[in-house]
Length: 72
Image (cartoon, rainbow, N blue to C red; front, side):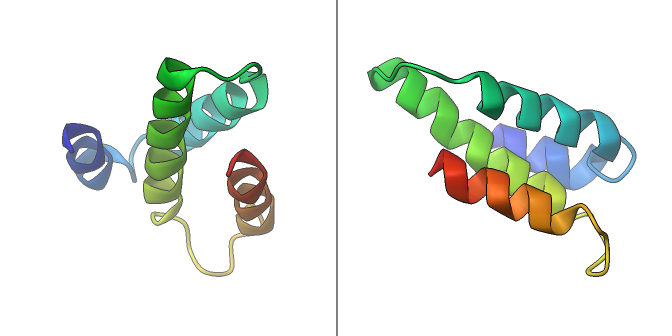
């Protein structure tokens, strides 16, 4: 997945913007259809991938995990 490779390479330097964008996008997802489900799936994967750049002690992790669980 190209998106994962981009996040792996640039994620640390763009972390705040990436996390904010994915969180906002997932919070705004409403009615489901096949296309939206696929977009949501990609957003969840990439959000989790971006979160891998956080330190294990980062206080944002519980909120991110909560957002990911809710999205699933």
